[in-house]
Each structure stands twice: as C-alpha cells, then as structure tokens.
Length: 75
Image 1: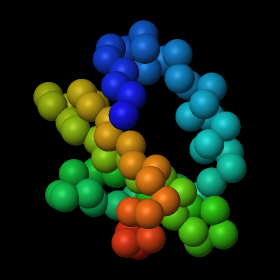
Image 2: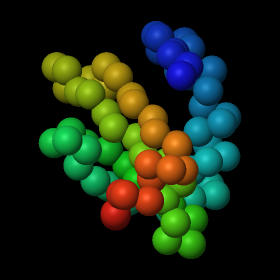
Image 3: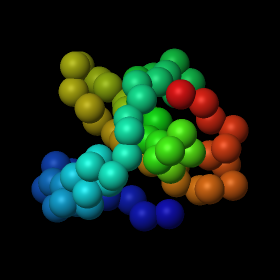
Image 4: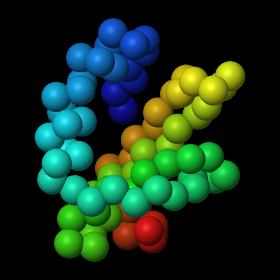
C-alpha cells in the first residue's frame, strides 16, 4: 500500500488521475455510507475511490484497485 499525505503530494498525482479519468467511466456510489466513485471500462470495475469529508473538505481518499476484490462491487 502506498500512502500519500498532503495537497502537494496528491496534486503531484493529477496526471495519473487525469489519464485514468479519460480511460474510464465513473459512477457515483456510496462506500460504507461515504461518497465515492466506481470507475469501469466496458462495465468492468477498474477502481473504487472512497472520500472522507470533514468540514466540507476532502480529507482522505481511499483507492481500491485490487482486481480480486473489485468484482464484488456494482455501479
């Protein structure tokens, strides 16, 4: 697992996030009651993002891209 902390570290990954966003279809979902996005290609789950929001700001993003766990998700 790789952990990124802080706005600067996250912003440094924007190119990667941008490429993924252009290659996938994003579906808004709830992940354990929190807002999230399920990203798919041809209806196949590719990644799941869960956002932690505190005081109206995103304070954490959890990303799941383990292909053995993703088939259990649905848009």
